[in-house]
Length: 112
Length: 112
Image (cartoon, rainbow over all chains, first blue to last red; front, top):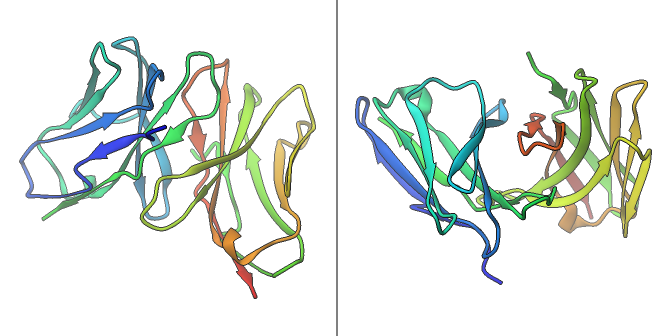
């Protein structure tokens, strides 16, 4: 069974640009969550989508947005990139009613 | 405000001995807790979880203990193996949502 797939694995951008990250969940999983991981901060919850609707949102500025498509694939967008946005962005999927989230290997975003 | 805290950034244990990783939380509404293991360049892998209606859950070499009055949970690994060397994250959620709050992680090193 294929796991959670995130693309691209690595990305380099400059300040002010915008970026879109993609996540394909495990087949049958309808919930997709996004996290930001920075050194010393652990994983910070960004948002969670279920059936194309955002159900939960973390404490991030409006520059961070996302969406989910009818096939449960999800994208995350960050606009007007700042140096502090450099991080590992992780996507996780779970079954309806399931508790354990399954993570992808992340997208490493570096802002120059 | 860090609602989930892992106060030990690192831990070293001899192979075959017990590893005990600790996690404290402040939000009494949390009712579901998970432990994840993370290797470098990979996403976190789900290990074990526990609901607030229980105080212990066991899965092979891994046991999680929950002390609700102290708002404390711990992960015991017995016996520890070199392959267990990784960063361990605890996470908590409330109300059956998929918004998980993660700790900052503890790096476990099992010495052969």
